[in-house]
Picture 1 (cartoon, rainbow, N blue to C red):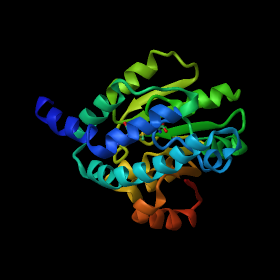
Picture 2: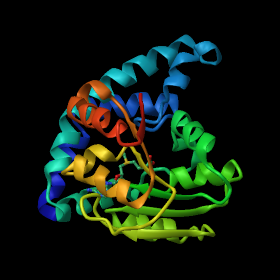
Picture 3: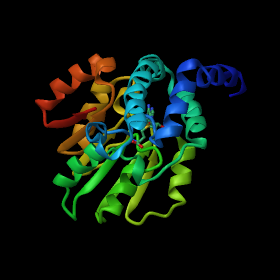
Length: 233
Ligand SMILES: C[S@@+](CC[C@H](N)C(=O)[O-])C[C@H]1O[C@@H](n2cnc3c(N)ncnc32)[C@H](O)[C@@H]1O
């Protein structure tokens, strides 16, 4: 773990990371959490904040174009270490769930529906769903054992948590399977989608920075023909 520390620190403090941090600090948004809707409704925000939203998008796109492909190809053991570190001080809560995805899912959910959240992180989607009154069964899957342990301790009722890779998760049955900003971290996104389709009749995917993920977008186009619904920021 120590051997990776200098590499990760260098990446975190690169120009892109620093700029991104400064912008996020000002806007209060987590990277990738600004929905199309939020960017398109500037009336409630100052010019400065709107301007920062545009810069944020550009910087984050650029940043993700390097870090996301690199992460998806890493062995799972390394991914786990890096994500554990990344989650350590990351803020969590319903406000970090993208509005567009939440509305899409809520428009389909019934009180009795079950949700499988693949790459769930700290359960932001669950927090947002509970805030909106949905009490159905939820299962969160993530490669980071530390984030799963921490989130378990919150004690959400009617929720299960599984530590697993997106490339090898168990066949968990649900009505809806979701990938919220996580599909592109799978080494084999197509296989992860297929597996999700075996778990649930409806698969919902949200990806950001579509321009940087042409391969995933192409894959989603194919998946749409098989009942997968997706949101692009
Ligand atoms: C950008 S975060 C999104 C988290 C959450 N879905 C949200 O929207 O708040 C990506 C998540 O995917 C998880 N992840 C990354 N690679 C993974 C993999 N190969 N298998 C399972 N989870 C993975 C990370 O631990 C992280 O929680």
